[in-house]
Image 1 (cartoon, rainbow, N blue to C red):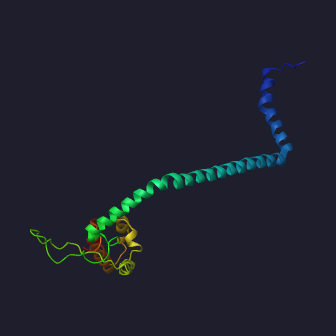
Image 2: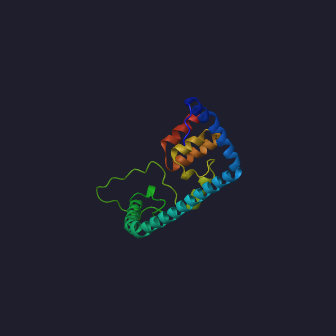
Image 3: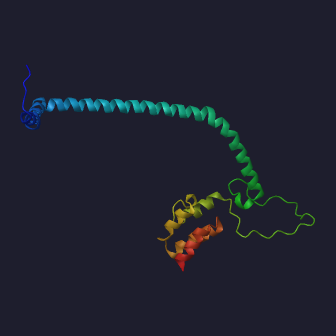
Length: 191
């Protein structure tokens, strides 16, 4: 038969005795229960990591397959066309062809076409095609890997240079790419 308690006794059970009983139960279960909970949690995390690793491996395989079978065959002809356009442009504009065109001026027969005006000499000097000399000149600069840096990256590194180092960078930049951002900043720093 169920025992009917007064509301005050029910509240006392709920507020005082139930928490005490729960604390004693937790003490009795003790570290073994906590160790079991930790073991179960560790097992769940390990299983999730293994599943994630398997999914990553599958995605990598599918991505590699897509690149090899779908993308590469479509892009290869475009790259070939781009390469030929760049080579043609290099032959047309020898000032920017230090990578693609043979060294030296374009062959001529020594005569100007009739009615053709003599073209003025290009304003910036033509880059040299001696790659070893180019690399040596870039390596001599106080900014490592200068040719691989964007103008903003070069500008960030200019403030710590000496006047002679700034002059060397200005000469190098003036002889090659003539980036106004870099040349203007060097002028600001030297004046």
